[in-house]
Length: 113
Image (cartoon, rainbow, N blue to C red):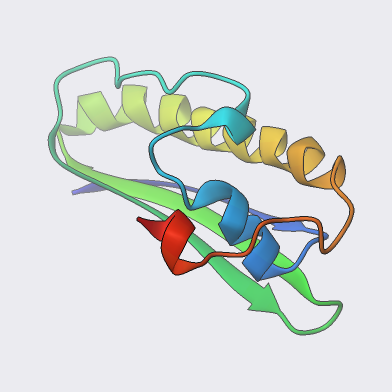
């Protein structure tokens, strides 16, 4: 099983960041379309996690994925995926910074459906 990983810290609360990325039907915050892997994959599992950093009330965001693939496929895929995670999380920074703290819609039953 191969793993690709990237993380960052944002100057907004974890709740505010989660309110932006939680609607999984779009990636408007990412500034790019999500590209498919450069080869067929098996058992693809991606996870994005937002955790609160208590000191400064910031957000720690990490994004990783695992797939079953050959070592050769992983050598091609890992830089591709980690570059994509980096690019998308880098786009999240100006997206959140363009909003004032507290200006995010917090998750509620109506916008979680």
